[in-house]
Each structure stands twice: as C-alpha cells, then as structure tokens.
Length: 215
Image (cartoon, rainbow, N blue to C red; front, side):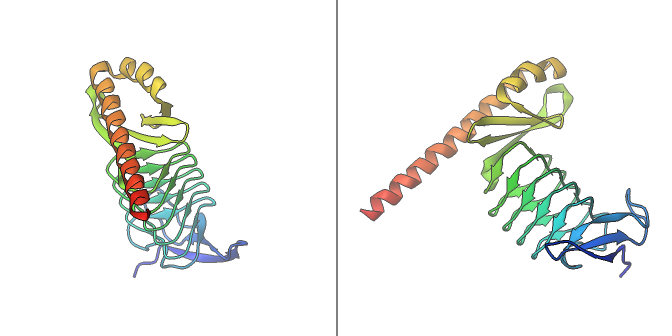
C-alpha cells in the first residue's frame, strides 16, 4: 500500500488524530497538515480523498475516491463520502448516508438516515436530508447546462444553483436573467413544488394510517 498520510501525534478532545500528507497527490503537497480522523479505516490511502482543516471523521465513516471533507464538517456513524463529492463548512453526514458523484454539502446542512445524495446535487443552508427524496435535482437548466437542487426546511423551500443557496423567490428572479431560459427555470420550480407536495401528502397518509391502526 502506497501510504499518503500519517498521524502527527496530535489528538483533539474527541480523541481523534491529526493527519499529515507524506506524499503529494491531487492538490495536496507532502507535509501538508490535514484534519482529524479516528483511524486509518476512515480515510483511504488510494485516490485523492482528503480530510482538511478542522474537519472530523470518526466511528465507521469512510472517505474514499477523490472526495474532500474540509472546514469544520463532521462525518460520523457509517456514512460514506466518495467519488468527487465535497462536504464543507459546518455540514454533518451521519447514519448510513452516502454522498457521491459530484455532490456538495455545505453551510449547516445535515444528511442522515439512508439518504443517497449523488450526481450534481447541492444541499446547503439549514437543510436536513433523511432520505433520498428530501432532495430533488433538476438538470440541465436551460442553456447554462447547470443543475439546480431543491430542498425544504421548516421555513420554506430553497434552491441551490451556481453554487449559491437561494430562496425560491430569489431563484425565480435571478436565474432566468443569467441563463436566458426563464421557461426551464419556472418548469424546474413547478417540478419541485409538485415533488414536495406529493411527499407531504404521502407522509400525512402514513400518519393517518398509523393513527387508524392504533385505534
């Protein structure tokens, strides 16, 4: 095995170990300090996967492929981050969630349960994803070819496009001017509303069924 990092001997209050690159790979230079992991099982020595800054990976979580975990992100439980996925800022991945493809999680987003976030999906803000259906990604978006991901929080629906997290109102107002494809943008919003309305209806039915079965 061609090792790409070592432990520095420094530990944090959580008992995790600081890592340091022992060879250059991707955008990492030999000698660069990384983030914190519990054991070498958390970060593959293959590919360009890396844990940077003050990010923490522990329990049975696994970072592999060319994935990047950075800033103050936390990956726990049995979560997997792989391919070219990026997790940054204060995002948290837990349970058995899988982040793959070119997906990005950022801001204070939380992904857990058995959710799979892949492709070009982007999740940010204060979104909480517990199952794959909590996020709807639509692409290509008009003549830009960009993807847009929609998610719901307790205070409304949000769209992530061009790496920015917007309210639906901002999305409708700004994106058509950038892409020149207003029809495609509004169509994407309609798809998102229909998607989450159907989810809400299904959840209400399930709750009613639970009540009926308990009576």
